[in-house]
Length: 480
Image (cartoon, rainbow, N blue to C red; front, side):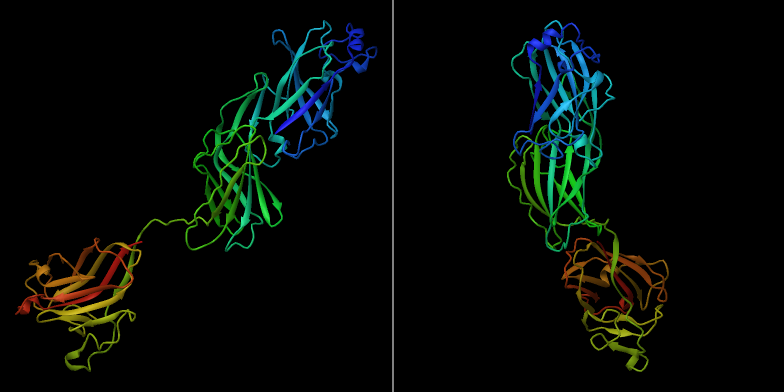
């Protein structure tokens, strides 16, 4: 946006009559002609050319005005305060009044908004950390009026331009979001401080990054998030987090090529929605213009999903239940007939048996004798898990002496989804103390209908009685 101000002077003849009595920056005395003072008028040209609070001046808006000698740039008047009642006319009082030099030399003018009485060394401290009042941080500057004196027949015009950048985001409710009332928008880690040289008209690079909460106003059912930001040459991949009163967070990443330019306003439309599948971001092509809407396109956002750190979890455990088998022949029951498993959703198959306590096990367990006795557990859901591992306890029915290494790889076969995995060797604890065994299944692919199978003496025609065994406390673990 641009603002155009008109600096009005008295007729040259009147000023010449008062030349002897007018001093720069001097309070007019009773014998001076008060009409000799310089006042300002302003005009805002077009709806697109606005200051932060709208397209007209507000009552008690103040500007600071500087004058310099046109010949050598020497400062004449510094930070003179001019105020409007809201009608666009600016006047000063007392020592704030600017007068042309008595010697007829010309001046050039500079001015800025909003006025600050406590500038040090003509440096305006810019701070955009708080967006509560946008007009209070909407820094504008003009320095184009040069070569004007008592004898000028034309009026100096000051064209103000915004020195910062503005962002406006229309926030809408999408699928799964009933309302965006109460939403907040936080610009993540954007610079908040800079210095503006009121003499040179130059802004330093920003510093002091922090999260900046946008100014939020209602716009019908939508909410408008507005912020005046320090210029940023590359805003690509910077983020803005929208938070609903429910606590749901929606993070939007600015697209590649994004930048915040002085005097420019970027406008976007953001739709907050809750859906179960990712939504493609659809952005229009941004058009950069002078403090006018810069269509940046529209984006659909899903709530942020905080991905927990993967941890190892137990997928299932099978202890073969507590059913009383003492009334069955040999105190055992076929795998397919047994009905007291810990995981009734599994489909159990195989030709081995579930037997009462014995050989160090205090509850029911699975007993493997002969050639290729097996038990198969179907429909195990491992979907989403990685780094699978199998743990179980085993004991040989006729185990060798304690301390002897048991070559379980030739006795027990573990088959997962049709692939055989090696069972590691373990020291014997005799036939009354089970051994804890772990089998690495990390290369196995997870799915919702996995199958785990234990096979005894696979491929051995006449296994020795020392290779008969029992298993219990079967656990499948995975990371998720």
